[in-house]
Amino acid sequence: MSTSSTSYEAFRQFLKSAKHIATLCGAGLSAESGIPTFRGEGGWWRTFEATQLATPSAFKANPSRVWEFYHYRRELVLKKQPNNAHKALMDFENKILSQTPQNQTFTVITQNVDGLSSNLKNLIEMHGSLFRTRCTKCGDIDKNYNSPICEGLKGTENLNLDSNIPIEQLPSCTKCGGLLRPDVVWFNEKLDPNIIDKIHEELDRCDLLLVIGTSGTVYPAAGYANYVNLRGGKVAVFNIEDTGDADFKFIGPCGETLPKALE
Ligand code: BJW
Image (cartoon, rainbow, N blue to C red; front, side, top):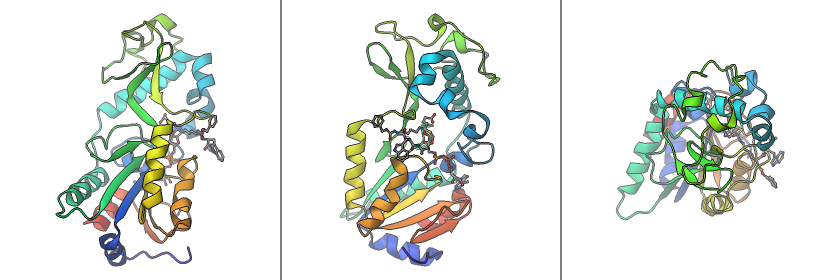
């Protein structure tokens, strides 16, 4: 990549000609819905230590603390709505799906676990979901939108993270009684190999990757833009900050830039 274009017109022209279009989304996509990012101003990892909350060893050492964090985030997200950037992705997907003949594809790969893109038909949630649980004993995975997720966590929404709730009062499996965990991907955990395969299928054919609201610091997602570029695909970045090289760059809140780019 050399110089970046900031022209919406040039982007829209390229978008029309691209056959396989994909996005890689991060926490910035949901920022305008009122959901904190991880590393930006007010971000989770600015206040809390990621290793104390988003690693398997943190959960083993203190499942109560980890569940308090995820309970807080579930309750927060349940009160939030998709914003104009989510809507732009939805409208664009509908536009692509209504083409006859279908001569373009559109896939949204998201690192977000908030479910605010869950109305999309072609969605890959690579880091899991706040609204799925996984049993630590039998491995059962289940959807769960209960509010609160269990009585033991009710009233712990002050984010002190020090309630020390006994394991028996944390979410438990309806099938085997084992301790449940959030079905998200923590640091040092492998992503689901089926999901990785699906992502690679997309990246291997992608002509244009839209990188929306991600700091590009967490692997494997952080390597995807470069991967697409090396294969000759183009990369368009939508971010409030300049995150580095790209063929197209739209700096500003994605609730404003994305609808304009995809109109
Ligand atoms: C806006 C905006 C607006 C704001 N409009 N923009 C290679 C090199 C080095 C390290 C590694 C490596 N490979 C693996 C690692 C280790 C690790 C890693 O990457 N560490 C780095 C920190 C260096 N990766 C892993 O551990 C991964 N696992 C793995 O690779 O396994 C391999 C393995 C092999 C063998 C054995 C075992 C393992 C797993 C990573 C899982 C990440 N999990 C989290 C938590 C998930 C659940 C949860 O949500 O609680 O995922 S961490 C957190 O970061 C979360 C996010 O999805 C992820 C990415 O963050 P994101 O979305 O980019 O958010 P921010 O806050 O960083 O950025 C927001 C951006 O938005 C900013 O740029 C703003 O400017 C912008 N913005 N408002 C537009 N309105």
